[in-house]
Amino acid sequence: MGQTVIEKILSHNTGSLVKPGDIVTVSVDRVMIDDIMMPFIVDKFHEMGFGKVWDPDKVVMIYDHLVPSSQQDDVRHYKVGDQFARENGLEHVHRSDGICHQLMTEEGYVKPGDVVFGTDSHTTTYGCVGAFSTGIGYTEMAAILGTGNLWIKVPETIKIVIDGQLPEHVMSKDVILRIIGDLGADGATYKALEFCGSTVERMSISSRMTMANMAIEAGAKCAVFTPDGKTAQYCGTVLGEWEKSLVGDEDAVYDRIITYHADDLEPVMACPSQVDKIQAVSQLEGTVIDQVFIGSCTNGRLEDLQAAAKVLEGKKVAPYVKLIVTPASRKVYQEACACGAIKTLMEAGAILTHPGCGLCCGRAGGILCDGERVVATNNRNFLGRMGTSKVEIYLASPAVAAACAAAGKIVLP
Figure 1 (cartoon, rainbow, N blue to C red):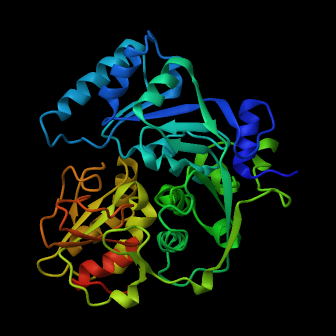
Figure 2 (cartoon, one colour; figure 1 turned 135 degrees about the vertical axis):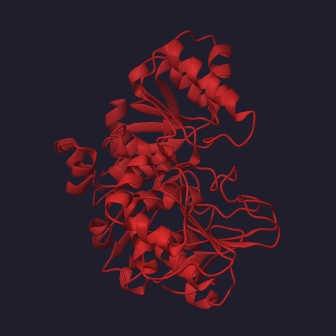
């Protein structure tokens, strides 16, 4: 019997043929720890009686949620993290270099076929390069740091086939929002999403990152794309025969197969305050807004900033509307400066912030108050996510968000 991509990865890692529902112990290729979880992980690590990290080279620590600090207690997270890194000889430490999920692939920490865990739910992002990756809590992370292993249940897989050419102004964000709307916020709970089809093959790695990132919003355990030439170039690696074999077999057993025709897709938004409450932008036109946010681990990459700049070229942000732009990493910021995207966005009236998670995770950098309405490119629009519980958050693509910033209301690009 054939296997899905995720089943192949887990079989290779464990050295035995796996099937959905099996409980297996995997050898971990890499872990990511973000600054929010550092004190809790360290406490649990010592409570478990561990003395040293199993393999310092496989641990990546990233300060991104709490930088720059906005509350006094943030400094404690820095100090605990720094001390732990010194004690264990950790060298892969990033202090405000960018958002964790951007850095993990951008810096080459994740390769096709890897098994990776991170202390953030959007760790599903690394499936963009053909890895099994998922988020875990601090107890599980402490256990991995001490042993290098973790047990998991092999997930069933939902295969999503997308064929055809996307219409103008329809980005991968629109695609994944449509999928989440169809599946529902719990429609893929503890399942893998396997993306394929001619539309997916044409997507850049950045576009695939957006889709893998938001798989968790349908409850998915992980998401995965078959590695190809774009993957190899992005990861700076050469695909071997095994990496090339990471394609869902024709006789693989799937939980279900869902097919989309790209020509039928259109710009959409997730409406307050549920990620699966999807409506076409055309149905929401005219809704007055107060702020626009372009950035996050979902849509803060170069192609996202370029898409926004293209829409805003020669235009100005509407009066009384704030446009906040947060590049996903220092590298992205520099590339966007070099190509002129940052200049265009600034001339339009955008506020540029340092790469990080501040506004998306509701910590700093543009928090809203009662009655305000924001169009944002991040991944969640839960109550209280970006300010008070009376803030309305609409999720959209960078192109749509930029158009809304110029109009001061929801509009199509």
